[in-house]
Length: 388
Image (cartoon, rainbow, N blue to C red; front, side, top):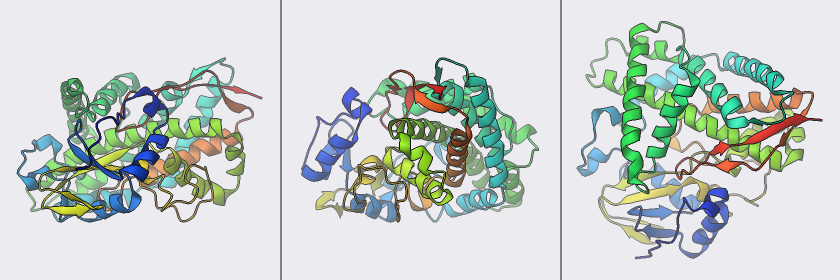
């Protein structure tokens, strides 16, 4: 067994820049057992995609290997095909029915107004004053619900996000559970009172009359997961994209070309994406990358490592805004990929367009502070300023 216990995703140096250590692992021990996380970790793109494609031998739904799963945890992201298909189809059809261009225009207007407000500030925090309110507004607009209080929701989201690392820090599990209860109560209020047009009303309407007795539960849980997951992924993606653009000042100007803007949004996510990985459970003994994974063992798919694999991406450490093809794993893959991918891309395009049209240039103001989380790569603090 190739075992590695020294890899610590929460080490400050790894939080600052995980890609060198992931490159070393990919070269030396591309599939390794991490005792602390009790998981097999995969670092090669080909191995990661092979696992994500194989729903038969690698389960997302832990009930398939005999584990108990609480009802609040059963959603489109935790179910496997074919049980997953009805609820995913409901949400994907509802997403296609939304006017995403209009959502993008409203996001752009919000950004333009916010940047005007921040124009004369000596320093502001991109995360708290741009990314968080923007992401809450966009995901609320998409679902068709009233925006929750930003500060309160950020606290709930932060607890849930940190609880994703409970395998590394068990102390974050209980605060995350309590935060999910608060968010579930908010979602229930939407189902009781919200009648606004949007994704949620479309899903509710088209779920009526279904003979699937579990569908209502799955829909409510998926609405919660989509709001929280959409928000946390979007806010992290906005922060990472801004940080990358601040470090590559010529990149922003290149995206004045609409074709480069389209491909550049994907490259920003590949280059420094928000979600660092996901996991699956082996349903039978199976070989991955020359290593035998036994029934019931966890496999950790490291998106961050796969997205910088030179076997898949030429010059992976270079920001190539016109990179094509670019089949990165920044939004996951296949049937468990992020439902809100198109909305996230729309938001990032609005952000870049607003920055391009701003009369002054965005600059770093002081050193940023990375969030101490492993699953989600984000900033706690990203100081910036506008100046000529």
